Image (cartoon, rainbow, N blue to C red; front, side, top):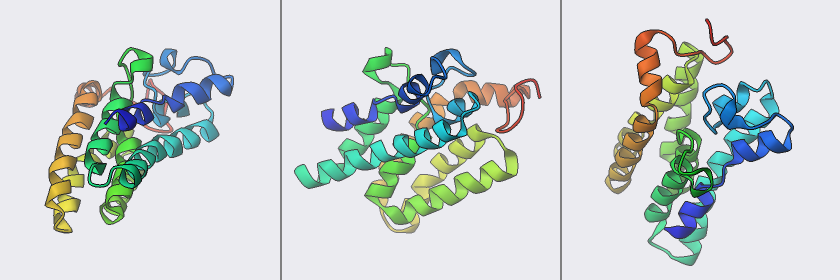
Length: 189
């Protein structure tokens, strides 16, 4: 679990924006450390790299633990997600967990991760709300696992989905108020 947490807690969005000269990500846009907020810096390449690395850290945590401690992959996955959501390096103020959730799903059961990615992309293209896409994909992750008769993963994914939804609570408030920004739109729009 410690290995998963440490890997999950690497704040790639913060590191990449600093290295890329875009400043402290936590003082930009929503203040979140994920790819959507990195996109608000105007640096699409940094946003794409953040998305990739945040997903990869979830996958790597599962893969390493699978090799070193077989049978403990699910604990490593949960710890990696918690690490991203509550990283010790940032005083436990982390991201929303969508990319990390996808990455660990890809390593645990790639079939259900395809469904997650398709739903996320489809919802994002229809609504242009990153939060709606992320929450929708997270909520359907347990259903995808159950459809493949992976009920052990369905329970894990349900717990993870609830964590992701919890981290999106401010987004839900903004959605209800009609003030949630769209990807590619201005904050005022």
